[in-house]
Amino acid sequence: MKKNNRNLFIGAFAVIGIGAYFVYKFVTKAKPMGISTPDKTKDEEKEETKSNTTKATTTASFLPVASYPLKNGSKGSNVLTLQKWLNDNGYASPKLVTDGSFCAKTESAVKQMQEYSNDRRIIDYNLWSNDYKNGQVTQDFYQIFVIKTKALPSKGTSSVDFNPLGF
Image 1 (tube, one colour):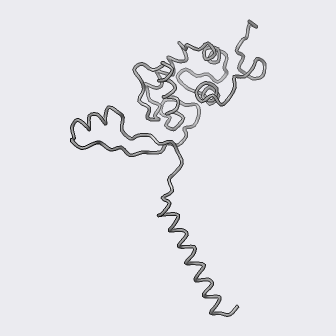
Image 2: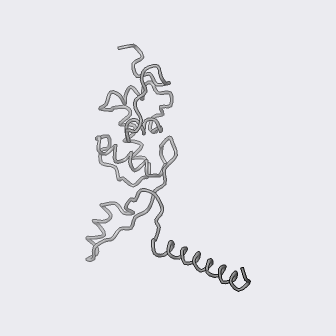
Image 3: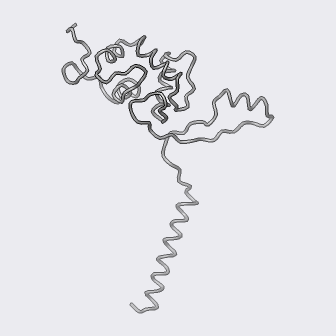
């Protein structure tokens, strides 16, 4: 390849590469992965709508996944899912604000669920689980009861024994 042709080839390659970058960056407007949640609660939106004659707009923020166990101070998309589950199953009174932040009200609802559950399997799990902590949600509990992607362990296959007396 001649010197002029080689420079032309390198120049064309650089232009194509830069063009591809701009197409990706500005035309597709790629968004980060995560669960979208409103920045404002419904009550805040109502108050803003009352005070302003214009319609309130909300922007979305993205939540990462919180590490386990879920406890006071945890923030993430799995906390948001837990809050929705607690609301839907009647463990939170009054209803929790589903913002993905594990606060004192969420902890109170978790304790309520752990102590006074309407599901016998939850009581048994909390009673016989080695990793149970009052007011906290472990990854196993979250997967078994909240998102239902994991089956309850059967008797004798794990550290959790749901029927210790053989009934």
